[in-house]
Image 1 (cartoon, helix red, strand yellow):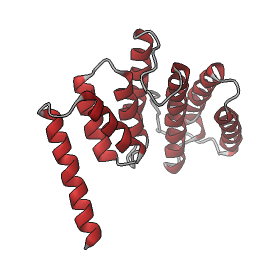
Image 2: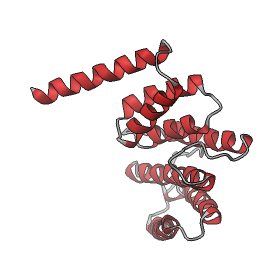
Image 3: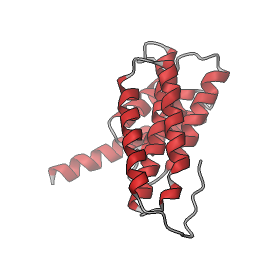
Length: 194
């Protein structure tokens, strides 16, 4: 009973905060903090609402698109295209805005840029795992593996010492070897890459 009451209070508080956002009773800084906090805590429904409200007020801020992409990447649903689109929009706005760091907790702008590309690589990784679960034919994996490697290569250019790059290189190599072992079979399965 106590957990149910706490959950109800959290939902009510989130609803009240969002309501305050739409009525302009909350500052952009407060809305940003709520967006970031809920995304980092994995409170996806709240993160979604706060990120959307933030983007409505600040459509040119890459941070809002980054956190909305983060929300969709980590969703239980396969929202790969939405996540990828939000990360790409964040990078586009970042570049158009003069490559200024949009997330204050990051030391410099290269961290934001590298993290966007790293998150994009995770989108491709999750797509590949989804295909494995769907028992897709071997031929369906190649373009996604190449996209995954390309995103990791961009992170490597930004941060050559990244431990994540080394780990992803290892995972990509293992994945390529695993896929080579899958039987090739004719099928009507067709993959459209993002």
